[in-house]
Amino acid sequence: MQTITEMNRTNAKLVREILDEKLPSILREHGLSFELGNARYDDDGVKFTGFRISVKGALSETEKALRDELNFRNSYGVKLDQNKIAKLDGMDISLIGFKPRARKNPFVIQDLNSDNQYVIGYPLVEKLFKKDEGGQS
Image 1: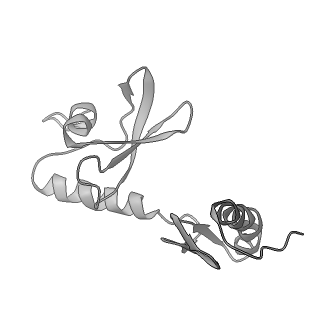
Image 2: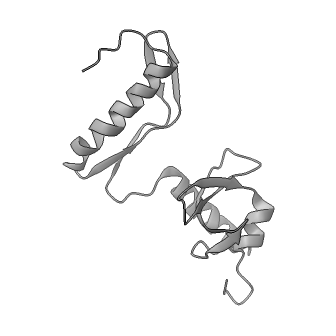
């Protein structure tokens, strides 16, 4: 087992790897999971923003924000279909999240073939996921 004596970029990544490896099995015993946000470090420590422990099956923060955004849009008649699978640049994508603080590209999409995630803006999400007037996608 390696002892970490100073914090730098490499060791901050190592701490993340340790947490990703060790914590899930401990938390799973109690029906919990966790998410780590971005890391900031100085000479002797690392801080993960957005460190969150959740009950099993809980929605992530971006999933909750998407639910709230869709409800808000629905009340104003701009309905998006979260269950729709759209095509973008040869990818099959789904709408999986929303980042309220991201002004230009707040919607999170996922490539269903690679599981890679990307962000897109309002015009594109409306083009790809807007429901027609009959409620169909």
